[in-house]
Structures are given as structure tokens and as C-alpha cells.
Length: 295
Image (cartoon, rainbow, N blue to C red; front, side, top):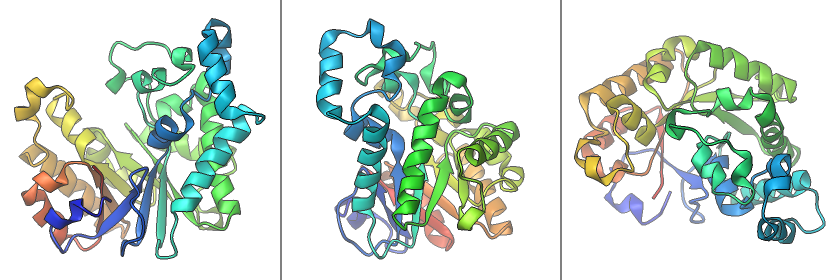
């Protein structure tokens, strides 16, 4: 959480910090980590670029070689992310949630070596989340992200896994199996696995999805975009993008109610909550809801 952003937020909100938007020590007791953002901001290359290295231009290969140095791609990827996360974890962080990557194919294509990503007609609704991890060509990246989590566990950190873009019950069952195959079975040594509500189905099925998971994370901007059918990056449609709409609020309430009924946590991530006083009031009344505000 940006320390400056908190001045205009409801004082009763249970705020947490986020990475890579980490601003240093504060009184917040939970940390939310976005692997997608860290890959884009700290790694700079696509971890699977070697699958298409024969079509990369020389300047891309030279840039990647300069970044990686004498390490293998796998070692550099895992070490860089694990060390960056480790440096952000503070003694007061009682909960550390790490979200597996959920950037769309356009974002991954922007990385060095990003040509290994196929173009999609609609990346926002494309191969993301579990549908990505389950595909053979992306399996090696999923394995690397799991190695980052295991590296943090080896450093003594008790981290939770957040699974983004869960579309339905089949996704839930699949990801629990995939994590177990990577040595991260839910429940082992207290490992908790949460799912992220990015699309309406994640909220509508929350009561049943929480049988598979240990909590829910609501991505407010994504949920608003896909509920209202409004591209949040299209300035022409700004007037239609409303996280405080009745439709979005009903989905949030349904998710919170399902989690409360099972005594499981709800986390909300948002970059625009500062402009949503109605939602702030609602979240302030939900004592079990944690918030991570980013810029």
C-alpha cells in the first residue's frame, strides 16, 4: 500500500501492503505479492523464451544474456523473485499471500523473448490462470513459480498461494492437483491456497469454490470490468466503469457472505478504492475483510 494513498481512505479499513508497490515499514500486518507484476518489473524476459529462441533477434538474446549472467534462466528467475519477495517481508507480516502469474498474453509478449507467446484475439479473456498452467507449453513457467514459493518456504516464510482467474469448479480441482504435483499440496505444513475472484463466476460459485480453497481474493478492477463488460483501459468508456455499481456490489456481498459462513478470509485488491467511498464504508463494516490498495 502506498503510505500517501491511505490518507484519503476510511480509517477503519484493514489495510495491507502489496509488492511490487511496497513502500517500506508501516503498521500493516499482511503482504500481497503479484508474481505477474514482479516478472514484468524485475525479470524483464519471458521465462520460456528458449522455446522460440531461434526466432529472436540478436539484441534480445544479448539483453537476456546480460541480465542472466552466468546463471541458468531457471536459477536466475527463482533467485531473483525469491530474494525480492524475501526483502519485502517484515516481522509484522502475519500473512503473506503470493499470487501466481495472471498477466495476459499481450503483457507477456512485451517481455524480452515474448514471441514465444501466441497472439490472442482477446487477451483479457484468453489463456490465463489455471487454463494457462494446465497447458503443456506453459507448464515449465508454472513449475518455476512454484519453485519461488518453495524457496521462500525454505527461508522460513509461511506463505499462502493465491490462484488468479479461477473460472469454475473444474479450475479449482485442477489447480489443487497441479500444485500437489509440484510439491505444494494444500494443507501440507499448513499451506493455504486461496482463489482470486476476477470474473463473475468466481463470485457466483463462491460457496462451492471455497470447499477447495482456504479463502478468496477479490480483484476489484477485474471483477468490475468483466461484470459490466467495460474495458477499464478504454478512456472513452470511463463513465461506464463503476466498481460501486449494484451488480458488482452484489457479487462482492455474495463472496463475503460465503467466506464468512465458512470462517475463511476475504482479501480485496484495488487500485481505485480511493474513489469509491460507498465501497469503503461497506468494507469498513466487514471486520474479516482485508484490503490491499495499490496505485
